[in-house]
Structures are given as structure tokens and as C-alpha cells.
Length: 143
Image (cartoon, rainbow, N blue to C red; front, side, top):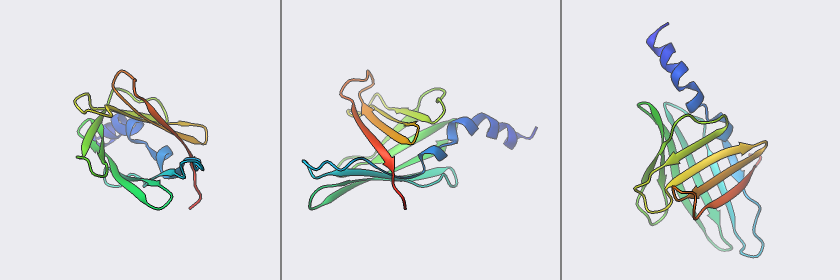
């Protein structure tokens, strides 16, 4: 077996993030007049680009993100508006259609997690112990 084929076998389960690709939005909050959407592009050249957009009644905010394959793990890089960029690192083996990133040195969040429940994409941020969790439930948007 060639070295490239061996590496592909090692990385394949952790880098198959095709289940994350697409545009995903939560239900519009009619009281707060907000809606959050994420768009993830397919992995290309070891990088998967994403963008979170939060629509408010009269304005929106956006955050650029990317997931890269670096050495032996996945890295989630977030660039939130008006904050310093931060990197979070995949921890251990990842279950199918799920990925968890962690950076215990970061103030908040320390954990970024995505997983699928059927046709629904779930996203959650929290502290490393699971406290102060914020969760989003997204549905795929037609493009």
C-alpha cells in the first residue's frame, strides 16, 4: 500500500465532513426578529470554509470560519466579529456525522461541536465542562 493510500485510510473518517456541507438556518425568532444561518462549502485542498450570519431586524453580523486538516487532526478556526480569531482542535476519534473541537485556553467558548440528527444539523458551544452551553438547531435551506 502506498503512503498516500495509508494516510487516506487514517484520515478518511475524520475528514469526511460532507454531512456539514450546505446552507443551514434556524427557525426565525419572531419576537427577537433574528435568524441564524451557517453555510459550509465542500472540503477543497484540505480546507472547508464556512460563514455564520445572524440576521437582526435591521442589520446582520457575520463570522468567517474554516476547518482545516493539519498534521494529524482537524482544526476549527473562527473569526467572530469584533473579537480575536481563535483555533479549536478536534479531540480524539469522531463519531459518524459528528465533530468536536476544543481549546481549553480560550475564554469562551472552549468547545465547538457539530452533529447531525437525521436531516437536522445541531451546533453547540460551551465551556470544556459542558456548562454555559448555547445550542442551535438548523434545517437545510434550498439554494
